[in-house]
Length: 345
Image 1 (cartoon, rainbow, N blue to C red):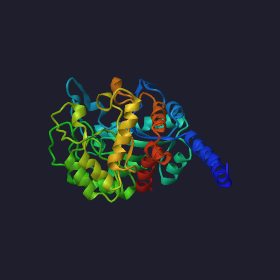
Image 2: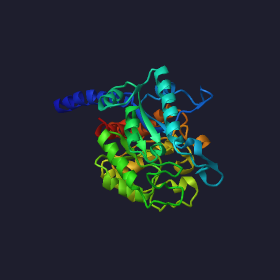
Image 3: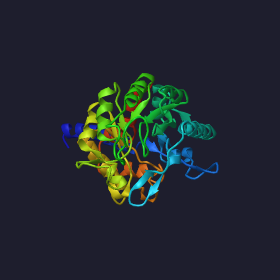
Image 4: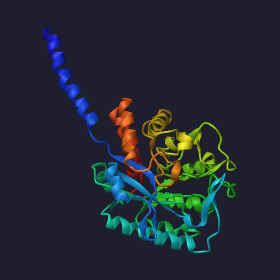
């Protein structure tokens, strides 16, 4: 071995060691959309602190379903609206359920994300929960309730879900508003002002276009999937719920992030398929604009992700594929963290 080869090998050994050490470092996880349910005050699902620890998840959105009492599953359609709430009922449900969630977080010694500092703490390894609402039906006609939600700790607000509300149209029923209502546009502006991340999941393409035109902050599509086709409200629920690629690119173009759900019928047979779908979407939208939005506990027996620990399998698959460490961390947690930091105060 000559002197040049000796010098080269001397550099190569520590470099290889550093690369291996970096690859072996634990990767923290963020999830833009999860549910944790109760029955008679008892956990129906694994307690959030337990599953966060198991998955090295430190930034998890716990979504309160704002219309849960007024929807049900219909064969061949998926979830549909089954009744109409009386005035004030959705606000009462929101308040009761949010307080129950907050009590659980205290009991489980988990902290809330309220500011950018909390996001940084989550990135440093301290588990934090983002209080999210799926379907802002509680607003009814009162814009002041956005501030009420903010004061209660909500930092992630999805405008629509599976039932009609005063803000805009959703994907799985015939549209009636032509997109966002005037109040819906006001809500987007108020979220921008206060520092609440706006979530467009379940919204029609017209809603997405109009919200992007109104918002001064990046937004997310927390959970779902992207298609080159044209979803229609008359399709079976999960197909109607797909996001057009053009709309996904528009969200990304405004600095936003699109989350991918873990729905078996759409994604494939296993967690490797889920990992591949996330990476493939990042190829289309850019590495800064895709994140995990598993819909944990929201997909029933059709879910590929049943505990947050399953997401470490996803990370393991990315490593086997030799995805760059920086790319893995963006998809795993960094992109959700970034859009939160840019939105909340």
